[in-house]
Length: 428
Image (cartoon, rainbow, N blue to C red):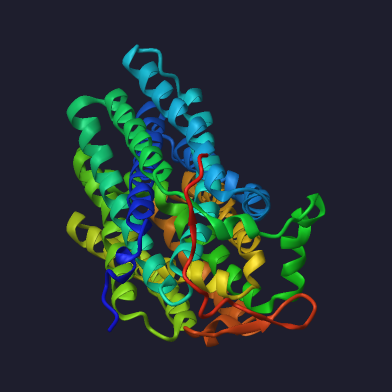
């Protein structure tokens, strides 16, 4: 009988889960602190959105490269090495604030480096999870990962706001850097999975194989299209949550709590998927997207803090359904040896987010923040509906779909019923 926490019984998955949770806690904390600094120093919606652009822009082009690296090299090492860029940069920014030398221009490079680290962490870690738990537990494992990420989002925003109000921006950044150190230590305790050494021995030409999949894998294109619309038109508003909350005249802690509603709602949706593992993955993925679009309007227009927070939580519930089915849909839509590149394309689809942030920031400068968000989500829902009429494959995707066509037109196994993963205790 399936239970909510089945995957946590698999050896080494709890370590990966804990590492991912602390990494996301730090990342979402940084994603709150960075825009907070920009808003505090400038009061400009444009500069706040640029902070989001800096954090998310690496996904646009870095996803294809990150996916290729994930398939070509040892994924465990790739995940570990990204820490040696993110940890020093976050601690440096905190030190500059404590020394009284922090300037706005310093924030953007640190957010960019954090975004680069996320590309390699997301692509590498999720494929490692698939290799570790196998196809039978992957829905449960990735839903648990998504629920952990959602709680990290909530606590990162809430903790970031509370830390700023209690000890200041500098010490808040030091704590976020320390969380990354904990994440590194935990992940390094996971041994090499032997299967990772049997990935495709692809040359540099395979870097472009992911792009070629966009012509041949119709199901993958359908999934990625929904992801792109959600990120361009919905998630592009997340740095502006603090700006919308500003109309309620509350302090940093309550602004953090408002932003935390995004994580709380996503946690509820992801936990439901982990518990029930519904067969209609694709329908849930799309339905959650529409739920998010609809209730984001309520968040933007609500005249009271509580109503705004409740609307955001329901919108985020839809995002939890979307996010907890996203990665497994992508990985099951392509052959096993292409999963890293498929997730790289997913990163690139998410990477349209900074473009949406730039557009939304400019619209907000002219029309105001709340009207800009409403226009964005209505436009996104309408365009996604048109896209799904052309590319509806995702709507029919179910749990346990074992085969699909590869780029040669041949059917490729999605590794259903793989034997248990073998561990090889090797050094980094």
